[in-house]
Amino acid sequence: MAETKERYGVVTGANRGIGLETMKMLASNGVKVVLTARDEKRGLEALEKLKAFGFSDLVIFHQLDVTDTASIASLVDFVKTQFGRLDILVNNAAISGVNIDELGEGPPFNWKELTQTYDLAEKCLKTNYYGAKETAEAFLPLLQLSNSPRIVNVSSQAGLLKGISNIWAKGVLEDVENLTEERIDEILREFAKDFKEGSMETKGWPTFLSAYVVSKAAMNSYTRILARRYPSLCINCVCPGFVKTDMNRNSGILSVEDGAASVVRLALLPNGSPSGLFFARHEVSSF
Image (cartoon, rainbow, N blue to C red; front, top):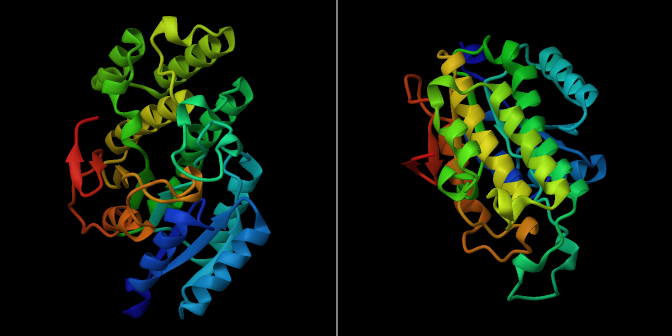
């Protein structure tokens, strides 16, 4: 009987911040969980931290670059070999899409002055949206073997539709009944073109953390599509709040424990729980 009760999880971008704390909390709940990181050295260092907390039997490392199809496939094969199925996928890996190295040494940080290049924007869309999407789709066969499959997409209130002032894009994303991945792709292509041409402001795209905002709006929309397509899975997205992490030079207001708690709550929802929702921390929010 013990075998059937064991749960297996994967957390992307888990070598620090919310990802690392999510690992710790899942392990505390008895979940056997794979810590993934793009940088193998940092990932193994994070694993040692978790082992020091007494989770040696519950944590394992595997390298993952969500922007690399071969890397995703390698992780899926590893999980299939080790566990035979997957119960929990936390899509946490993300980047800001701005040159954070330009921030000064201490607060207050002037985020609005940070450089946003086309290359950074492209990388942001590729990591935050396409990487999460490809990872989720690659794991679907293993998730469908679970009795309680969960996908938690770590998102942001920055991606709420009220922040998208491009009327066409907002209209497409609001039309949930007709929303498809192809339509999301179309929006991202248009955004990238306008970014490259320098016409973001005139076309009504967000000008602050532009690619980050658009990537998270896409992630939220994709969560709805996936939840509708796979009603046997519980798939939600969550904004953990403004958490103190390396991504914002620890300028957030919540601790990583607070941030991870809202992620883990969704990862451990009981069967029959709602799917296809956006949570602002612990509360259901509009998209």
